[in-house]
Length: 265
Image (tube, rainbow, N blue to C red; front, side, top):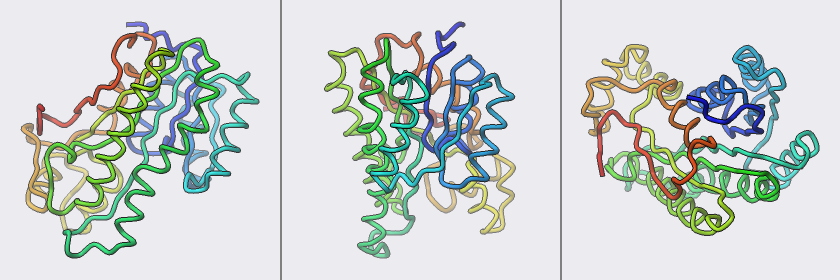
């Protein structure tokens, strides 16, 4: 299926590793010009090399602290200069949050969860909107989490922040629908991300085995998928690519679970 992404200008925030990089790869394989925004130079440079090999010869990498509004504005202004003031696709994948029970989390951990999980996305969308509006067609895809629908007592701050992101995304879909800029949310379940695999190894589990990883998640967090294994980052990428594409011409305001069947609501 031709997704109509050839030549499209796409930015993946948090695209230097994990699910973000998997999404960026799919966009590159479909012929998009892809820029990734990440926190560290080494990871960003590695992602650019990867994306160049995937089919995006003009892949770009920007090191940006998305907690800094001025830095975010400057990054998108630079992309505008490079891409004739147009942007077709914005994907926001970042959003770590503190783990811990309600009683254990500090005020600072709550605040940081909202800062990391929501405000980075808000700054990037705000900076990107003039470029998205200038393009012939445009899509926004934001990453939430399945824990907003199936709670874990170990993730109240993270889940609250992701719930807020989902709500803001729904509001954006309403705001931008009349301009035919489509806004959708992807809610990954238990995916074998670098952070989750590292956590599993810290508790003595082989996180590289998706079946053992799911067993550990079930034991510690209490929300396994119906499937017996954790998902893989590369299983997220094609979903994002479709939502970000011209083939997706009428879906907006949706929240798509990619979670191995942990929740169907």
